[in-house]
Length: 351
Image (cartoon, rainbow, N blue to C red; front, top):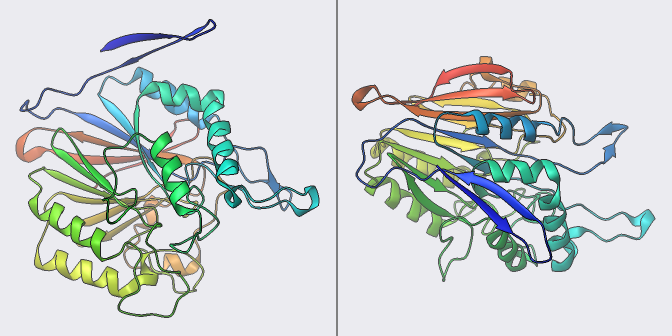
């Protein structure tokens, strides 16, 4: 554990601490990953109800991290901030209309005291979804996607992201005996409402080839794949976003997975403004949302999904945790959901 203090020009200072990871080659130890998505942090009401609520969740998480006796980090699962739409009555353009407006939103969110405390409490990785990429349901047609990518890279110091010939936020990193594959579900995404087509893609062929190759080559005990949109959900009523709208790409990956089983695989996602867990055989997806955004109840179409683990549905602001623990053959990943006050909502072994 290291403690540090940064002295600022013109006076003032900021202090914090961090813990290094075990040396390469060390036996894997216990560690924890905090997860969450959909963080609306501005004062705003829609339909008479606040769109964001329970902002003290960030202090709850920071306090838990400070008291945690395990090494830890946080993985943000998209909609980590909200680029707001236009306000015609006020003559205010959409924040995703210009790079300058997008940057103001990033700076404003990062200046908020509760988030500053959370960011000082541990180290962070992130993927994005539509609201921190551009407009609602934004896809590859977004005119300012290169500017959005530049800002994401500036504010989220992930490992090297994308490739020169195929830009995006996708990347991978190893922590002890777990390898994390962070996917970009927006930069190369075809329109959600485009007609079904074998070529219609949420991730794109280059990213999917990179993922398959990485999973096949990985020597890690656990492989964790994170995407902004839900991966194993179904959408019988045609309302909700997810990989189900790109059936050919998803079916192709699941068929590859069946032919090439990947041990210790776990999927993560966010977006939906409620928390759900899906199970397909031995494969689980932990979809964790929202941190502060307004809750959307799970509807009848979602409840009919045979993959849904109904006892893990959460319909309040919440965050999740993944605890990697045990030794040898007894090593496992235990998932937990916590409300904004830190109350434990459920516990389940997912891998």
